[in-house]
Amino acid sequence: MTTNKVVWFTGLSGSGKSTIAQRTQEILKENRCKVTILDGDAVRAQSHRRLGFSPEDIRENNRLIAEKCQETAQEYEITLVAIISPFRDSRADARRTIGDSFFEIYVCASLEEVMRRDPKGIYAKSRLGKLTGLIGVASEVPYQPPENPDLVLDTEKNGPEECARQLAEFLLESRKS
Image (cartoon, rainbow, N blue to C red; front, top):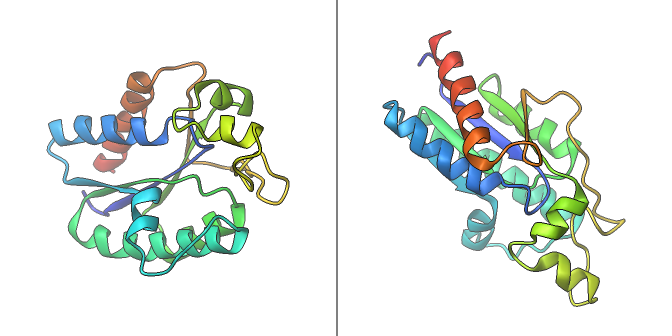
């Protein structure tokens, strides 16, 4: 591979980012790629700073992850970043920080669908008023879909296995160039 890649997933909570990242990692390892996953929740938990979910804290978490990607890209061919990353400006900042090796992947599912899935129970908590400021639900923290992603994975039309296969094919094809 000529350039190590940072694959920056973006999508609502429950859209399938982490599941697709994990399966994509397995497929890429089968193809002898050195690959790692950075999960937004894990990076947030490891941060020495207490970051919440205000727009400012979300942007700071995205900035920290972009910096971490610069480090992992030195060691891994592909870094898969499973993160909501709701703001276009912070994704643009991440692209500037990381450079030409940045690939934006939109994991697309409607708000209605992710509310139905609700794997973490956060949408139910939000409906009950037990959780405020939920990305994509609260007006102060909107989810801004990407305008020109490198790849769209529609998890309402395709399951995680098919989405992971599509992404792996995309990355393996770009590996040749």
